Length: 174
Image 1 (spheres, one colour):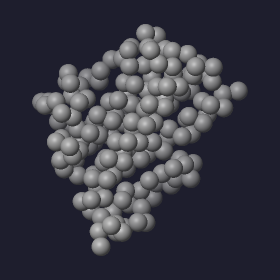
Image 2 (cartoon, rainbow, N blue to C red):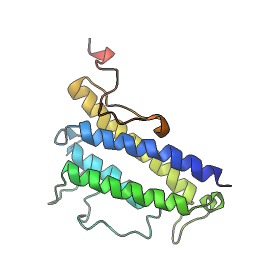
Image 3 (cartoon, one colour):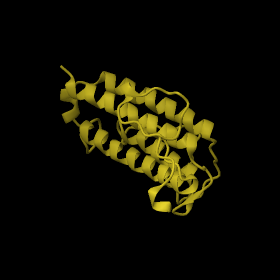
Image 4 (cartoon, rainbow, N blue to C red):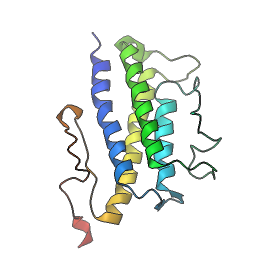
């Protein structure tokens, strides 16, 4: 049985839904910690792409420029939100295909040339993707006084086009 792999697949789906909602609701040009929010979105996506499976055996996306994954580095590349969402679609498909190829026992193994187990890589990306999703959502909440919709269980989610949750006004902004 692959109970752990099933749990990982079921719980990674909301992470992808949440970062997708963040990109659909944020002000891409708002500055957060010295960089526009779209750079933080790319940083989170690139990390999920590179570190979820094996960061030591990885090929950069064709549009990537050296150092672009660090929002503090200048870059000549500017990705649109449509490009970021397309990249997210590719990452989600790649990740789900990877997870479908795993067994629970493989989670304890280290991929080729990697110092971390597969489970460590998964957990690190859960944390990292959730952190940056929250960071982007916080930026949106400050600017709009609305918090983007947050999904905790993918099988209970229906995409009805509503991007903001029921908590419209911040209780702190009185």
